[in-house]
Length: 151
Image (cartoon, rainbow, N blue to C red; front, side, top):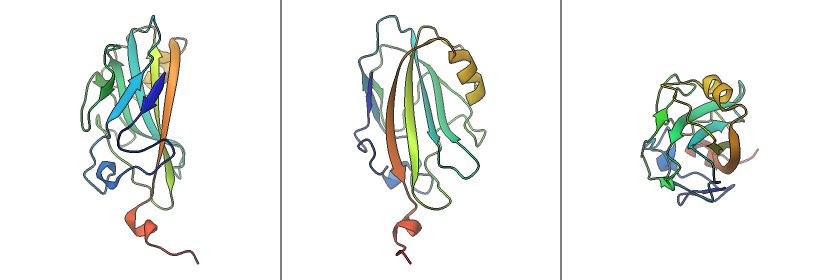
């Protein structure tokens, strides 16, 4: 599978528009090459560089395999609870420095059927059912951090 965003390239900076300090709208995503036999897709977006361990920004499950992406700010499927305990997109908000944000799309051989799940719920339900995975990584640093000079 392949996962891309028209808003940023893999490894590149995520625009302020998609950050918590900006408009906090989810970026557009496009995917392709979903394997035969897939019955649903799941999306997990997290920050592995968060000070207290990996921080989940967005969980979406039971996306139809007929979909080829999500428009900016779009919702579909079942949205789970992020680490702010909200069933929505909450964009990048690193306390300091540049963080990586990993968008992981999973093709599953079943629908999960979970309403407002946590990441733990999603990972437990996906175990043994992942047919393929695609990743896209963006980076983000707050504007105040971008303007600082190295000392």
